[in-house]
Image 1 (cartoon, rainbow over the protein chains, first blue to last red):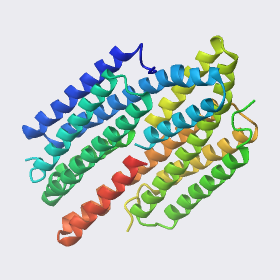
Image 2 (cartoon, rainbow over the protein chains, first blue to last red; image 1 turned 180 degrees about the vertical axis):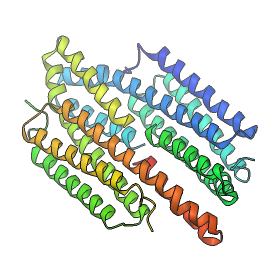
Image 3 (spheres, one colour; image 1 turned 30 degrees about the horizontal axis):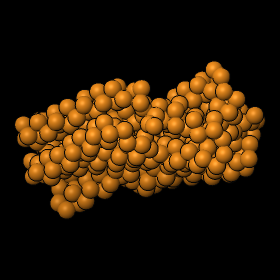
Image 4 (cartoon, rainbow over the protein chains, first blue to last red; image 1 turned 90 degrees about the vertical axis):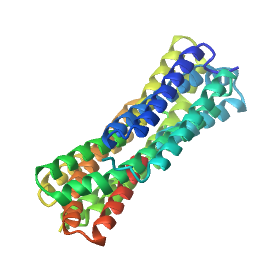
Amino acid sequence: MTGYENGKDDILRRLRRIQGQVRGLERMVDEDTYCIDILTQVSATTAALQSCALALLDDHLSCCVSDAIAQGGDKAQKKVTEASRAIARLVRS
Amino acid sequence: MTGYENGKDDILRRLRRIQGQVRGLERMVDEDTYCIDILTQVSATTAALQSCALALLDDHLSCCVSDAIAQGGDKAQKKVTEASRAIARLVRS
Amino acid sequence: MTGYENGKDDILRRLRRIQGQVRGLERMVDEDTYCIDILTQVSATTAALQSCALALLDDHLSCCVSDAIAQGGDKAQKKVTEASRAIARLVRS
Amino acid sequence: MTGYENGKDDILRRLRRIQGQVRGLERMVDEDTYCIDILTQVSATTAALQSCALALLDDHLSCCVSDAIAQGGDKAQKKVTEASRAIARLVRS
């Protein structure tokens, strides 16, 4: 059904860690931590989110897109176009 | 002390919203939401984190860096170099 | 052979335009143009390069990767992994 | 006048190298090089452009912005806002 079926635990673990990083950021701001130290932590959180997205995308290409291509027909090209658009959003965000 | 002293509430509000977005991502994965819909939400969360970083950076330049420059001396150049490195981390993350 | 066989003219046109943008940047620096105006033009050039990469990647997924998947076997997964790595480099650059 | 006055030769050298990279990309496409190899080279070119932008920005903060702040008045805050907007364009491109 979903491309990350086998990697679900890994994705959830990554998201919980990111959740912790964002809570850490709130605490840092609350305690008036120096701006640059907060920015360093924001960059680390952004990088963790991007890695999570790349893991999801790899699963999606290996499963959903590959299945659609193996079955052939119109749906295959649709899936590729949909994936390309998601990649564009990632690259531009 | 910190550059975001006046914007602290705004930064905390942004971080709480990002926190909510990450929790939303966990729920989506938990409920086996379609990969592409999750990726769209990850891109939105990354963009929100970057906007938060840019707000912090603007505060930092307007306060901490500007104060150091106004006072002059060695510290001014140090603050600019430190800010440039934080910007590089943001651009590359 | 290559995924961009049909889009080759489009890719070459994009690269020539980017080439022109970089030459424009050299001229701007040479004529001591104001830093911020140069930075705006660098951002536009970076965005043009990324769009070109996304066009190449879409062609690659539609042709090379799709062909490998349709043929099945070991090569299919290899192609997907290779594409995922290229996407990661794009997202992180 | 410009922030990169002292670093002008360095900036021009970087841009000429990027120019060479883009010409190399045109040649690769012209010779039907494999998509992934082209994408790797596009990522390297994007990274080089970003490094060039970061060098320009550092010069700009050290000179133009610092001078405006040292002189004080309205212009100082204007310069900081202008720099923040350029940073936002870089981060988002």
